[in-house]
Every structure is written in structure tokens, then in C-alpha cells.
Amino acid sequence: MRIDVITLFPDFIAQSAGIGVVGRSQERELLTVKAWNPRDYATGNYRRVDERPFGGGPGMLMLNEPLTACLEAIRGDSEIPAKLIYLSPQGQPLTQAKAKELASAERLILMCGRYEGVDERFIERNVDEEISIGDYVLSGGELAAAVIIDAVGRLQDGALGHADSAAQDSFEDGLLDCPHYTRSEAWGTEGVPPVLLSGDHAAIAKWRRQQSLGRTWLRRPELLAGRPLNKADAALLVEFQAEHLKKVKKP
Ligand code: 9D3
Image (cartoon, rainbow, N blue to C red; front, side, top):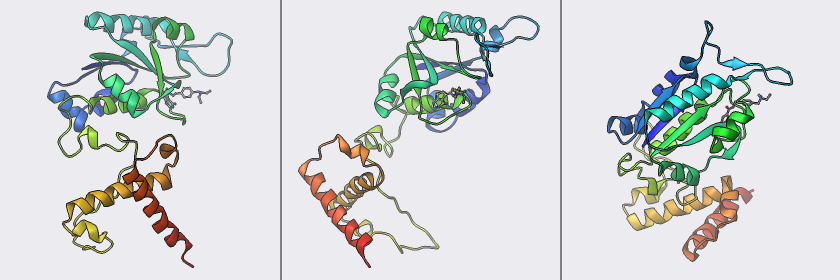
């Protein structure tokens, strides 16, 4: 897969896509991330990339011409067709389902806004999808692009090791992860649920599933709302809820 990114901060994109699972995906040529700077397509002595909005008011917009020239250069750099995705607070929220859909494309172009954003006509003419990463205010689209590159890059075939195969992910089955424990010189096994030390793999799997269900119920009940549980899961959750009630009701 290839991802081209339009950004006034190409170094940030290159750096963030250079680490961890995504960095390794690039080294193994499962993924290529290329950042393009509209400033390189700006004209005049000042190479301006911002402009005042029609109608006045505070703040600037991205200047259209450098964006258009940059996009043309990107489209000309490869024959592979690509959707243009604009990262913006007005977009559809990113989900794991959307990440999967994007991960199946051969090529994507991500556009990061700065200032107050992009001329609506540029969006109408060029943008295929608008995506937000959540309901909070960022100062530009770069962190959102890095999030998408990470979510999509790790889904490329062969990117993940066995341990965190995509099928094991929290959200893959719509539940939060169970708690984890490891060796500690200082803490020993104190506070570690005994079942994890039992060596009984079936009991451990059952406990983990129950913790996933229970924590989802406690912390993110909306994830369970539209989701019928099978008999085994329903029984595990009822047992967790009973245990939880005992704990919180103790005088
Ligand atoms: C005057 C109101 N503006 C500033 C408070 C609106 C505004 C413009 C530009 C708010 C944020 C931004 C920059 N944000 C992004 O480019 C962005 C973003 C985000 O802020 N939140 C969640 N997802 C995304 S994706 C791109």
C-alpha cells in the first residue's frame, strides 16, 4: 500500500510513520508513506500557503493554488488511482471498521489542514471523504493523519507478529481488553488473580473473556448496547455483574 500525505509539516509525518510496527511495514515494503509539502508548490518570493477568508473574520485558510499543484504532482507521481481523504473536525468519526476499509485500498492520499482549514470549493472538487479522529480540537490534521497511517499500516498483511495479530485486537470483537500481569521482582505475585498462575489454560481463557465483557460493561456500556451476547458470554457477564455488586455493596 502507498499513502501520500499533503502537509505543511512533512517531517512530522515521516518521523511518526518511521517507528514501531508501521516503520517496520515500510522497511519490509508492505507500505510506503510519502509526505508532500504544498509550500514546495507555492509561488512568489514569500511562498505563501495561507490566505484570508472571504467574508472576513479571524484566522486564515490554506491557499488553493499550492494545494491544487501539490495534488496534481501527487496524482502524476503514480498511475494508481487513490481517494483523497481530508482530515477535518467536520468529518465522519474514524472507527476500526473504517480503518479496515481504508487498509484494503492500494493507495490513499491524506490531506492535512492547518489554520482554519480549506476552501469549501477545493473540498467539493477534490475530496472523496472527510474523516475526524474524535470530538476534540487539534491544531491541524497531521496528528490525525499519523493516527490513520498507524491504524491502517498495522493492518497490512504481514505487518503484525503473532502476539498482536489483528484478530486479537480490542475492538476486533467489539470488547475492551482484559487486564494483564507480568513478573515483578518488587511485587512478586501479590495482587495477581490466582487463575493466571494455575496453568489451567481453559480457565484462563474463560477468566480473560469474562474480564473483557465486564470491563466493557463498566467502562464502555455503549459498546454492548447494540450487540446481542451468546449464552456463554451472557452467563460470564451476569457472573461478573454479581461479583461486582457484592464488591460495591460491601458496607
Ligand atoms: C474557530 C474554530 N476553529 C478553531 C477552534 C475550528 C477548527 C479549525 C481547525 C478546529 C480544529 C482545526 C484543526 N483540526 C484538524 O485539522 C483536525 C481534527 C480535529 O481538530 N479534531 C479531530 N479530528 C481532526 S482531523 C483534523
